[in-house]
Image 1 (tube, rainbow, N blue to C red):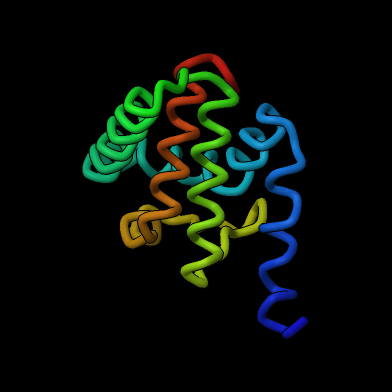
Image 2: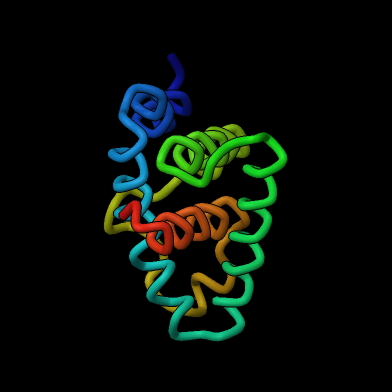
Length: 126
């Protein structure tokens, strides 16, 4: 195992083994709280997150998946795996970008996961 694969192991290994509810909680802790706080402070960023949320809802609908904990967690897992493959691992809880400017420049995977959290909150899942 290379040093590079060790760096990604903590993110990739537990993803498929935790429950959907626990996984959504983890995503909220990793990116949702800070990302949504920034989005609510900046209308342009909130519009971007809303666009991501609309795309997620459409993807789940097209896949005949419900907007529930299982559907959202499965979607979030696929984004997290893609982030690792792109060598852009997710931040640990408490290590996400903090400022509006950092979130405005955050990559697609982080913004997509913030949108997953937004949907989960609005659906009463978090």
